[in-house]
Length: 238
Image (cartoon, rainbow, N blue to C red):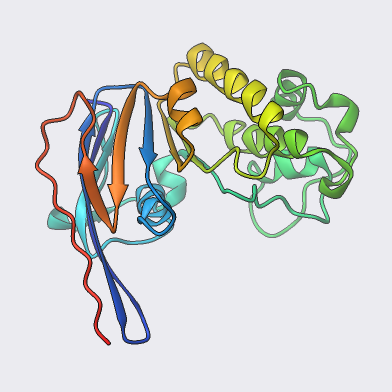
């Protein structure tokens, strides 16, 4: 099994409560979490990545257990070795393309050098055709180049899986189409498990081997390869 996820978390904002209860398994390499805004997709991805802690649950990727609250196990985001690309790419505006990619390899708070060579960074600059833009800042490059920079930063650490949060949402339609194909080819080449969240059906058509449908904090339809029991709960107190 590639993906084995069972997570619960109660989110509170003022007097409002949102109960997240997400359970699915899949043997597919490319899985899409699909659903409307507010379904809990991003929060689920954050818990899988270890950025946010569940109240209870378990996460295993490619047979490696990353979190199991019953066993008091929770690996740090660094220990999980999952590449996580945010919806807005989260590039540092004061760092060049090269520095942004190299930042994933740095330790401490010191910014990477603007010119120091690193074969790992050079590899991904070439792979994503960013060499000519290595000294540019994020505001000086296109949306597609910013996405490639974010992907390069995620992949330079040699992760075991790739998590993408609405990776094409900020791009125009023609660019989304070409970048979907690039991502599909890259995933096939690297044989890297991919979990992508979206509310765009075109992402499903282009990339999904399995689809997990989410709504109101839970799973409403399971992947074809999954036999997990699901539940959907939404509680609001006024």
